[in-house]
Length: 638
Image (cartoon, rainbow, N blue to C red; front, side, top):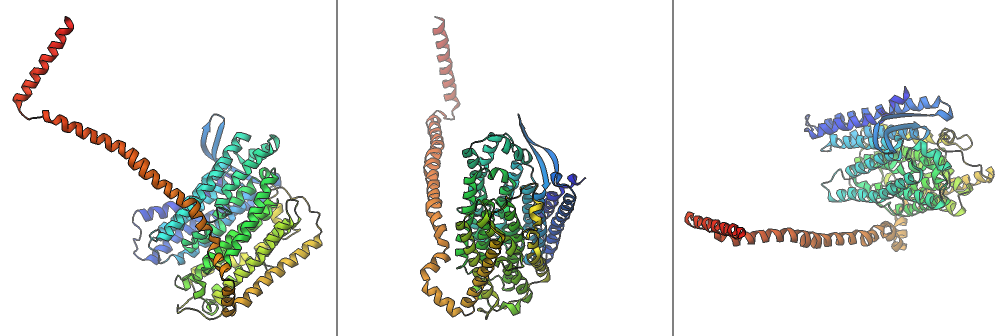
């Protein structure tokens, strides 16, 4: 039965984690050669995540053969919590939504695992790295397959833990350790909102099971304030996991981890958790126009804000990191205007081209002997021709040039922002301007990296085949992946109908859709040509930098948001912690404990004078004690 296969999807990467984890704990490197160890550990991890992909694909095919009303499979493994009427099972659900995510997680995840074999060949602990990678995929699969909100939250916390382990993988470097800690703390802030939203859902609707919740949200009358509170609390959790304002600050620092980690976190897994949650609970979010408006505007502002920062970054991975924050904003913009299936569409295309770009950047870094500064690159087109070829595909896809995948999903988002009842001209303009900036900063990156003359003495070389071949697969997906959501014959929207209802038809004419599509392509082309004009001759770029030096410094320093957070939150908490340590811990708690100890010592010092060591003295003291006792007894008898 297909339902009996569901648990195998998260089970396989869990087994891979245990095998590589035990190998590492019980004394890794029996072979003694790092490259060989990476191949063995990588082969184990890649095999198990690929096995999950095979099962996911088989279930996807099985679902396609079912009617729309019965397009789901469920599997309950055991009872998790049972307290009175509150019952939560360890259960999984495969339906139209979760199967898309499992295919992306396991499919793109397999390519990232294979790529990592080459990238981590010189690392000291490849088995530990691949065990963490498998554990990350296990947690993400539990998140999207869970049949209840607590099961999703279990996976939600799991990916948070794994992100901490992977971002800070090279923890002996203090900056990398701090980046991992920053990601962990920022996500805990968001997770508090998720928890409070989950508690409010149960007290309001009496269930946390997804299938039950989809029915009762329309049957149980609830005030608009309660629904809005639930949605906004859940969205706070989404701003943490999916890096939206104000909790986006952890994601750019996540670049401290190995590049395959960046690709896995930023493309196929963790950062899409928030979009998955909003899509899964679309019936609930649709009941709150206020929450929908907040989601749309936060997404649009995040997309625009992150794009402005990406323009001035010189670290190739930082550019892609802020690009991810911006693209996630697009996804929430789509969900906020009611186009949930369009947001999911961009999740899929983004997984393809952003994984390609991150792994392509990793190939550049590998070929440049771990140099990440684009100002020291240039001229790599001839030295790394294969990497350049696939990178161009990812670049055109994210810029929104047809017929590459990013064009279809990004253009659909802009159209929905313009035409939807929940949309507005303001949302559309912010998305359109962000699209132009995206084309500009991505073109800036490719010109600085691959064109012109190399600006350093580093001898660049092409990456090994095990790193390059996955890039060609991702390039093919980045080119053709958008055809699943072609307007007016949208397979994806129809596929998601059992989970996400069809959107209401718009009153805006199709001719306007063609006009906006043309403007979108023209804007992308303008961004590309502007970047070519500025960065083909770096003297012009230098002149513009000097002319707008203050603005450039602001953008280069990321609008000083980290410094503001440091002043408003981090340092006050540090000072409070030090006060608690010095006053409450050292003076009060330690003072009481140490004081009692000193009192005991002084008492002992006072009483030790009667300890003479003389038997005669002890005999006299015993006699005196006996006489006193007898006198007391005699007095009582009288």
